[in-house]
Length: 381
Image 1 (cartoon, rainbow, N blue to C red):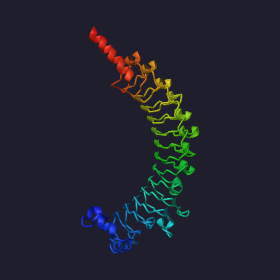
Image 2: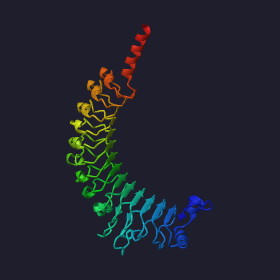
Image 3: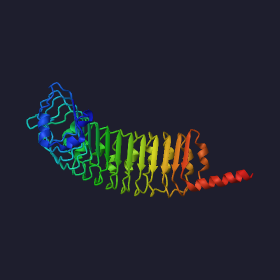
Image 4: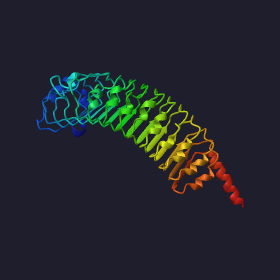
């Protein structure tokens, strides 16, 4: 069942704005659908409260742009609800215990996917009063909640449950992640973006033995990666750190990530060096380092990474020469170099890269000038 202006041409936006909250609530209360309804989508509802419908067979609920709503209905009591998305509730300041259902012994017993986004005024998310909520939750996304000061306690409730994917985006006031995050034994994907006040990654990170993907972006208060955290991620395959302005140090325990296949470090202007002993990254296939101007050289241990087939470097103002040892990376198939203003020449050892299929050099003016002079000399002959 769909309620909203998108599928009702006669229900114009101008009329929607003129409709008072009281009238809207009275109208929607009288539209109660059949109890066998499986999917409920509500868009642009102008009321402040949702109807008191009884729909025990719902499996999906999607509320979008219900901008005046100040509280949520009792969704935790729905026994078959497996997908829930709440988006664009501008007036919501707190998610209370009524969300779980005061008399519900086990809230959200079937929920597997939950996304909450664009709650600009949400400040508090109350817990479920000690009940075993969200027992089979697998995917949780919390984004664009700039006033939320801490992660919802749903995470603490779910710490022993099979959560496999967690995404936290644009929660600017969050300073710390709960240590309970380290108990998410089934977590495979963790993405944290635009949390500018987040000062560190959570304790217990090393306990996430199933984690395969970790993305940290636009977290400008993070200064270093924990030595006792990153190295314990024994299943990690992809690590991406982007646009962390104050990050100065990468964990030395990075060398312990023997399953790591993709490493991306981008737009970290304070990062002074890459960790040593990278030769232990035996599974590393691609390495991207862009816009890290304090890094003056590539770690020589890369020549021992026998699986490396893609290397991309860019915006290295301090890089004057590519090291000759780059010719020792026999597995390299793609080499991309861009915006290295002071790079003067390429080493002769590039000829040794017999597996190389793609070579790209862009915005390297000194190399371009050198090539021009060679072409002129060749033409004169």
